[in-house]
Length: 171
Image (cartoon, one colour):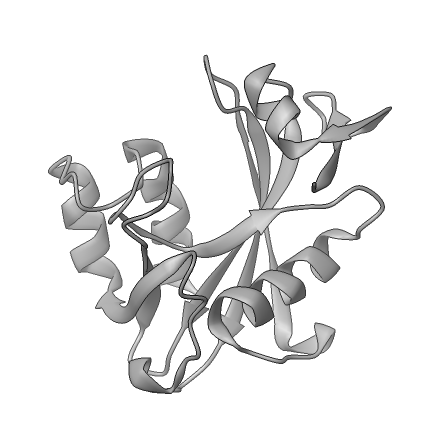
């Protein structure tokens, strides 16, 4: 059981703490973190969701996950990097991207907070969480944007996410 805190549209806690699955089944707004990992070649690391995932199996995504109840955003980002990719980092290695996305829809509402991590490991050097991921690969930012704009179904991003990739590209 993973507990999350329900928030309002400004990201402020409501005081309601429930199981993550219940938050999803009731479509209650809660927080998530996403970490864009970028290398010196201006490529972003994408991870492929494993085949056994209930939602969106075999789709490429960015490292991230839910913020647990009582957990700071940056703590959640550091935890997700360790769990999914075997990366052990310090807080000062992460940069907050001054952007958050409030995604309210019919089945999976979140407020996502974005972070950036510079990393030059080769894809094969990451220790991936096999239950969650099947592989990781470096992609050029323009390639990702092109896949999104073409509605490519191998990638788990909507056109709204293009602006975030454009922000990262400009950094």
